[in-house]
Length: 107
Image (cartoon, helix red, strand yellow):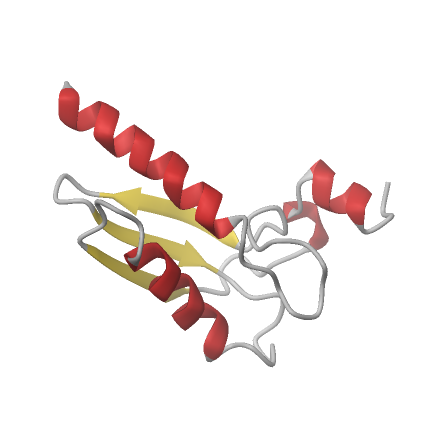
């Protein structure tokens, strides 16, 4: 049971860190922007993040996933971090949170 609580807390810590990473072209964090499709934490506290980019030609296609990995690795308790990029399904504005849409004047 203790492991489950630790994993849940670790998940919350990961989301907090993801909310500090911004797409350089859009003033909204990558979590609220809908770029994070899944966060998986196994029993060894290894983290795998499935994410996308706003487009396959995104200028930060190289640097953004590396930034995410680096920041997640620094979280206390994380033993490893891996980011996988996917374009299935492709990102669309529908994936944005209400908060992000409001921030960008889309509501």
